Image (cartoon, rainbow, N blue to C red; front, side, top):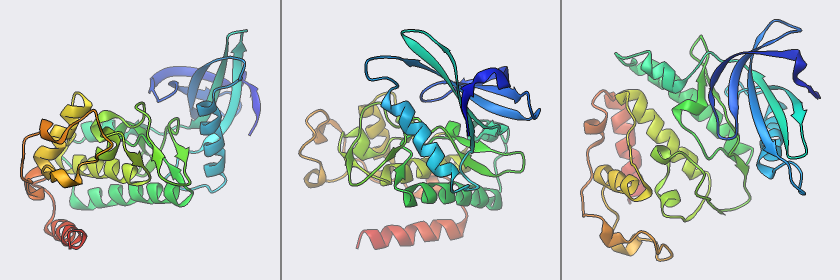
Length: 281
């Protein structure tokens, strides 16, 4: 992996925007292969390159050394123009045809139980690998899960990822609102469960073909969660949260899982209910 100028790559079309930069489909002039080119404009200061950029590169290099099939591969790091105020940097990744959001849109009739099981397994394999490497992704959503032409999942966009040693205090910029865990919405310390919550929302979306909780603000997001999962009792409400009060929400009972995802198979439903009962013993 080199740290050279970007003349080796030719940008072909814009794919989209990630947590920290614009992503283009590009061609490697040496090999002729398609790549994904993430352009990051870095404001320079007395402290040099911002820590979140260095963190993403460091994490990707760490993950690359493991060569996990469900993690997108970083192929190169190179720099472009530089002025006194900013530096343009390019992160070069393997090119994957589509993200999970696009994949869902292209299947308006939905997925079979087998397809959902395979996609779910690969998402969870990738997340398990991250957590085993002491990394929290912090922004899992369909747009950050890539799907190859043969249906394999690769986790991408590690601009908000972070290594952890213990429970951390989450900043407001992390995790897209619709996939944000309750502890994040309440401003509480967090760890790997925030990724598991996001994955759970994504797995329901594979069944329903639409996002589960579509809030417009932190309070509205919590309200939509409570309408499905029920409102927690007052004695379980975090005392340290002074911005969102327990009595701001109506008391609502839980909705059955098969009402949320009517296409869920009986075996999956039974497993979820058994797990739920064990957790509530």
